[in-house]
Image (tube, rainbow, N blue to C red; front, top):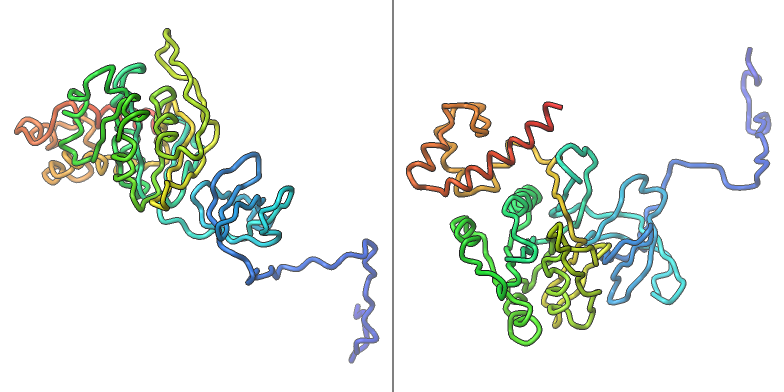
Length: 338
């Protein structure tokens, strides 16, 4: 049944009145051509603190971004009140593509991926030489996440006044990973902070490490103008520290020499998001030995044809490194088999 005549005009069209009196919905979104670019410094319960043209602006994510979340280090486009004055709130309307991404999961069985920081150039893996004891497996996992996310790793060893770094460095110096050794006394009274700054010069560096390893003490020495709460004591029973940093925060190095991103202490670093075939890239001392492996070799030690055993026997790599790789791959395989 035809509702209108054969040749209807606009007077014949009946328009239903809008009882709410608001504008009709549209799929056409504004382009926000007047938006200004900023860098996300920290995120706290839906409020994002951003640096916009030298001003600190608090913003929230626009609804049109949907489930897409901005993290520390992201370059974002912001509209609204950009004055940075107290009790003002702007809106983040765009998130720029990320150059690098540091990701982790709570453990290898957790499918929920957490983006720790975006657009960092370097990952500083902070490890105490004692109190708590160093955990090489954790270092290896951080190396995997760094290589997978496009970050250059840097090994920062703290508390050298309590233990020698020689044993730990034996396993990592062959990898070509840059490192620096510090003590608390050197950070507070010496030139250790400046030596660390030289390795961070011109870069965005994310700091990651267990609770109690001295990460926040190190960050406080690097950026004395923005001191974070000091580190807590290490539990004498568990050997673990207490979390004192609860959210990631980007801090500028003195003299505009780069950025430090202090992240909360972690007790695990899951790699659910990393394809097992890419784990070998975090072991550059072992990777050349895979050239003689059969196609589809998993390098997990369950295949007798794996060439990595001969590679280690010939002295090209430390057997402990092959053990670390295979422990990591075994963890991945258990997750995939569940």
